[in-house]
Image 1 (spheres, one colour):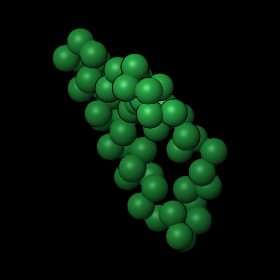
Image 2 (cartoon, rainbow, N blue to C red):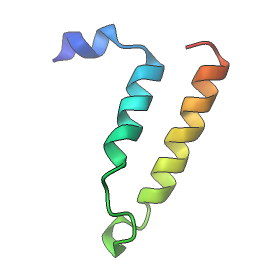
Image 3 (spheres, rainbow, N blue to C red):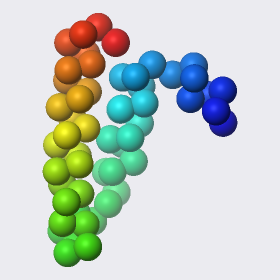
Image 4 (cartoon, rainbow, N blue to C red):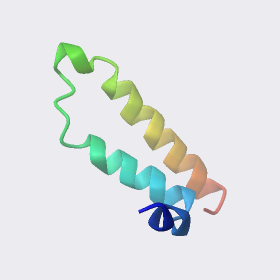
Length: 53
């Protein structure tokens, strides 16, 4: 598993993290900050793409 992580680029890891958030029910009170996490991940993905990762 660790070897798999080492072979992935930062952009791949960020994209995979964002994909894991898609099925989360972000409207639930206990996940109130989940939507901010998704926004932050998308911002990081955009920045990584801009840097050529």
